[in-house]
Amino acid sequence: MARSHSERLAVNVGAGFALKLVSQLMKFVIKTVFIYTLGMQYVSVSTLFTDILSMLALAELGIGNAITYALYKPIRNRDYPRIAALMAFYRKAYRIIAATVFIVGAACVPLLPYMVKNVPDITENISLIFMLYVVNSATSYLLVYKSTLLTASEMRWVISKTSIIFTFIRTAAECIVLLVFKNFILYLMVGIVEHFIRNYIISQKATNLYPQIKDYPDKRLEKEETRKLLADVGALSLYKISHVILTSTDSIVISLAPALGVMSVGFLGNYRLIFNTINSIVTQFYQSFVPTLGTVAASGNTEKQYDIFRLVFFVSFWMVLFCSTSLFCLSEPFVQNIWLSKRHVLDRSILFALTFNFYVNCVIRPLNAFRTGNGLFIQGKLRPVATAILNLTLDFVLVGRFGVFGVLMATGISIVCTQLWYDSSLVYKNVFKRPPVEYAKKFLARFAIAVLCIGGTYMLCEFVSGVIENVYMAFIARMLLCLLIPNGLVILLYRNTYEYRQFISRLGFLTRRFRKKAGMGKKARRAGSSADVSTDAVTPEQENPAPPVDMDDDPGSFQDNDI
Image (cartoon, rainbow, N blue to C red; front, side):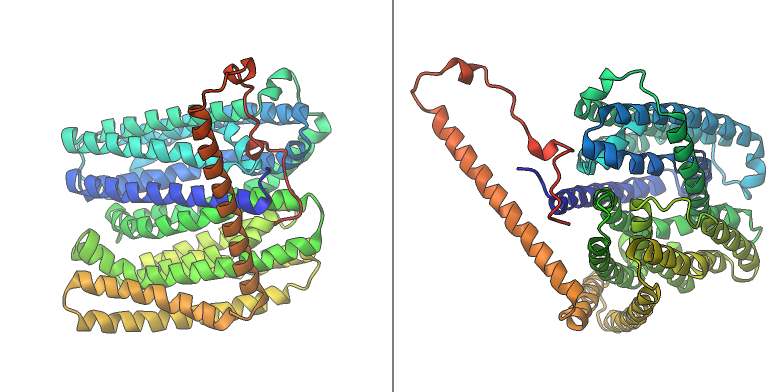
């Protein structure tokens, strides 16, 4: 039986959540070992170089998103010649990107003394460390392009499953290297080797999924198709630049500030690990959702898309409200009492800025998903330029007066002043054919609820911490408050709304569907066991059975009567 869109989405989201949960837990493990074996100096260098390499990722220019969007229709129609042509274009583009990243990265080596202020006291050569980061980034482009086939086929779970296995292997190897050898260079080499092997295996899985494209080795895109694709890439490059500036320049600006320096980046990195852990888990929902949305968008059903958006926007708000409340109320006691120590705690204003950025960035993700799923790349391509310019301007204006807090707030202010209102207008007018004021009203109402919920929960948490002396029991009590208050508030306020009823209905439908399949699987296994002990003669067909046809893994098997 073919999986419906809802089931594919549920499997992809579940696998994605599992991957992010595992990977982020492993990051906490390895960072803890890192801090206690090598020290904060190495953490600071690692954080800074990771952000600098994120800037080099601009060479990708959004080609991946453009190719993924272009693959939806040919995958749906099983148009293997066009799939082969798109992958040939993608392979060539990524080889050029890999070379560009390596050359530009090598050219940055002489500039390192200007980018790294107050160089930490480490024994290894800074230039060698940086080049290992460059090599890791460049080689990742040589194989990873084939994973786009899995993403566009709503089969991200294959990528997630493979990545979970390799995350455990990599973390174990890195911990051994740090604990036994205490060698940063060897630690980086482990990451490079793991990254390459993982991408190779995922690449082979994608190749095995579409063996038909091997029949068209010389198939290439027509000139008109190439021009259209490059136009989309050109527009997406602006979005890519804006995203990198929003997420990766903060560490560089802070590092350049004379009063702050690289060590401030390291301490901020501890908080960012916590926020990025939750952010990456939430992101899995949207990453898994976009391919499904792309398939639905291909049908051209505006009302269906709007109904889906209402549901996704509501679920997004619910998730983000719970996560934002928990992050604001639990991060400081977690860093101080559970994970590290009091000397690693930053000012509470920085926690406020991180939470504000997290909420704004995550709650508008449904708009981004619908913009991408509908291929709205060229329309509004100057908006990300405005976002990037405003963010950089505010970074340098606010860092002198407000320090780290000013740099972080610049990101959230830039998103609100540009992306929030413009992208909602773009999607509502071009996709839903509705006035964007509908979105503005819902966003403001839900933001007000979030402010009251986070503020009220925080005050209760502080009261509880003052009453309970044991720091571990106090942390558990804070966790319970963060679990009960935001979730209870959403159920209380929205239990009679269309979005809430739709969510409960979908959840019940998927639960019944999976239980039914699980029951069928148990019956099949019992039947198989009975057959194993049978004394009946075995026919030639039973001795050499034909390979089973797994319709769940057939990317062309879609059902349009579901989400």
